[in-house]
Picture 1 (cartoon, rainbow, N blue to C red):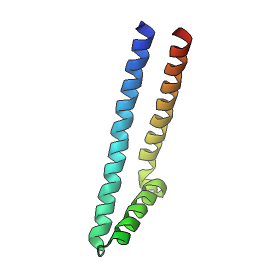
Picture 2 (picture 1 turned 30 degrees about the horizontal axis):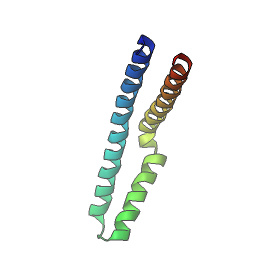
Picture 3 (picture 1 turned 120 degrees about the vertical axis):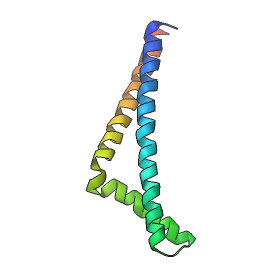
Length: 94
């Protein structure tokens, strides 16, 4: 393995770890919000599904989650760029 391949692999791993942290944190917050909504109302399969969808909608639309959405979007774009860059490197230097 060349040094460029190792450096690109390490960069991709670091970006992925940070992205995974932000993604799991977002999913954890959505799950907590769903739990709070379920505690306030009666139980039932369709009711739980509607609470879950409402929690996802709240994460996507409410201003209090704007920074989290922005960070997650930027990290997703960066991860895609790193993957594309690594692919280009490996196809040109292979």
